[in-house]
Image 1: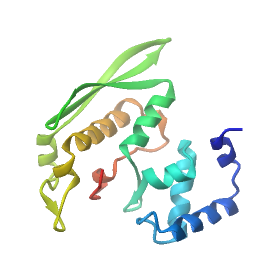
Image 2: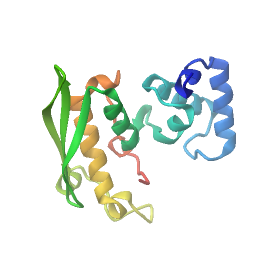
Image 3: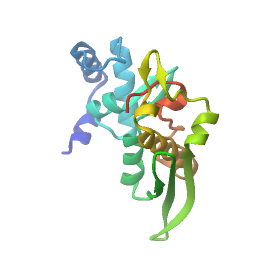
Image 4: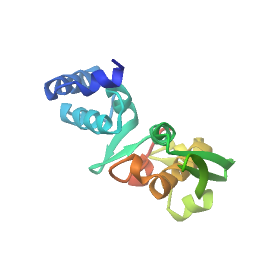
Length: 177
């Protein structure tokens, strides 16, 4: 039995216990109450992620779950139906080509891109936030990739999740990539 299969066998009582353990650990700064940990674990379970992966890669912002770009990429790649490839990726622009397996053959189905100009139009803070350098200032390439990936996932791979997926900064969070 795989780790995910064992995880799917967890009862609500087991998940509540895990939520308490994760909160008590102090390792997850965004979890102030056990219930918050339980929500992250349950949401991750629906997407096929283990409890620890869920705690690390799912963030709830203003009542909406947001996934790290790594978890989004995992959903796309492990679907077997979708994939993406990098067309251009530098500190000014990220362009991804999304692919779908149709009748056993990979076909390009669309493109998703995000640029520094797009980020500026969206009002993203580039220099500092609350006195600290933002992730956009420190890691522009990673941030552009995350935005292009989430955009493409919603447009071309919507069935990898039952609800729209967002990266945390799309919901207004300051992130540390």
